Length: 503
Image (tube, rainbow, N blue to C red):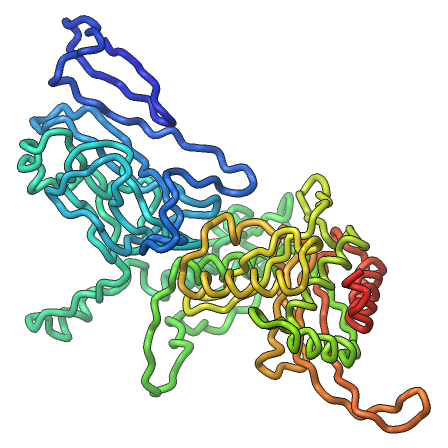
């Protein structure tokens, strides 16, 4: 029988033999504790578990997550132990990679101790132990990549004397191959003849072609028609049948002209025939997520694009005046763009919405996702409530988030969510481009650089104007063309006369 007690988010079980009775609180010391993980539900933004480390510690910015402990009652001679498997650490996580182990085999582990550092599809996560014991065995070493969820990663025991029993323990689950490991080279004993003696298991090309010819119409052809078709080399699938329901008969094949012999099916030549040297780069978890999400966006979201040119003379002049008065943090044109976008979203709230399959969700606050390029790929930290913030405050927040993003220290709550996205390539001298929508958001703004253009002023005199092109990509399921045009008109009005943003 067993006694059950609850603690925090885990359910603890004490196991006894069928002949023993439920002990008192003092209990039997030999009874082993097994923690069964209770998976928390993901609703909107992910909630962190575990204590928050001091900002100056080496773990600053990393999300702390309690390990997913799964215990099974072993029927072998092994002592009672806790199997630690890889849990889902983000709503979109399917695999994870072990960056490093902070504890080694034999080390004592206390509740709250850091065990490992895991790279998920979003960020690098610091793992904590939620139990006391000893790390008996590390199943997957540091550097293991693309580990499926639920894979055994290590073993924890309660008594130190039990560690030796797991010295040769390999685990019930087979460890996934590490993509960082190079493929095994062929041994010298392997001759070219031996290598050629391992053809693909598929049948010969001629047999494959014959099966391809007969597939699809065989069930509408009589046995005699099939025999005659093979003798004459006729594709029975191309013969018009005169029998019931279009069935191909022997006479139909006799009257059909003989087909010219088909060329045998051969393997396609490699797409790349260049002799130039190359290097295959492994995909990071972030790069895979970027590829999947952008592909999903372009395949499922009906994009359309609206472009407008904005006279930035007044905004550039106002920024210059503000920076001459500021001492602690200078503002950038991108800070003005974020503020103007947030205010335009409040005035045209249809753009500040998202598609939810069966309904459209309209947000009451503007959380602006700002695209930041890192070595691992593109990530979009969020400026929450940008419509309520001042321009300098926005600038400070963006600088803080961009720094953490490039250091890989963003917490999940800082980049998951958002209601509107801005991608700015103006610093690279780009004149115009279109961005891919970040679902489930309904729009993304692509911002180019400011360029000087010779034009005529109100008095028809030539004058150099500082112009900037922006392109709004919209989800047509949520934002109609007229609504997108209204949003751009509001955005242009705010940047053409930036003092309106200060009111």
